[in-house]
Image (cartoon, rainbow, N blue to C red; front, side, top):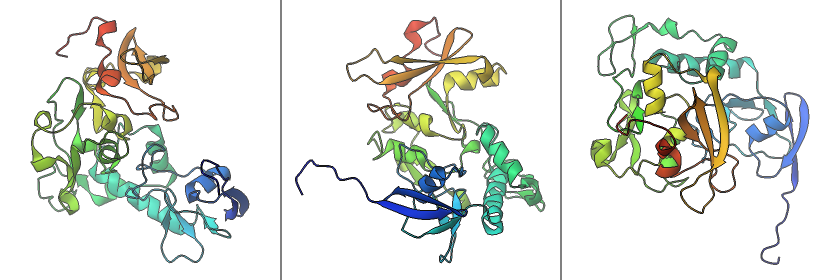
Length: 301
């Protein structure tokens, strides 16, 4: 075969909830489900990151498989028969959502998460009322929780680990999928597992370059723009009053696309589209946080 000549992947036919669909070889089960018009819930998956299979919300039932399989990473094979809404799948997703919601604050995780909790009849409260702090030993009738005060140690973003579900997205974005800084990783085991810097040093003393790519991929608000955090604390954060304006980053010649989120004629945060061919949703510190020059903002705020 000549070098540089692309060969289209051969098509593979699978069955999703009784519907035959054809997808390219190498596609994931999740992509096959999307082709069939079936939406699969997920918290740890993102198009611009390597799947790590940790949230387990996307599991589906595959005929011939002993265990439920993660649809975000399992590759399709010809003749696969996939079921996405069996009692076994619903029970698994319900329990995962219950365990997460009983120990983690999901209030900033987006409306779709609340919809999933309702759709699967999740009852987090059946594990008991939340213990007051992550380090506390839960009393009888209390559900263990990761609750702890937000960490506000820089002027760019806030870390609120009471919202962290350990989806690994921030770790992947900080590592080989985007930044190659490797400033953070998951430390500890079991319920003590948490996102940590090397040797658990304070963030300003770590290798972090404040690109904010971890903030850009966080699905629950555990990582949040300081500007958004301050507005939420003041009760003034209102996405319904925000507009999103695409533009090109002015700082260099790479040409990253920025999405300016504007509320009350002020930029409150900056994102980048996942399908942008230059940045794939990732930005540097200037592109993500260097918007203060266009408005009168307190540099220390």
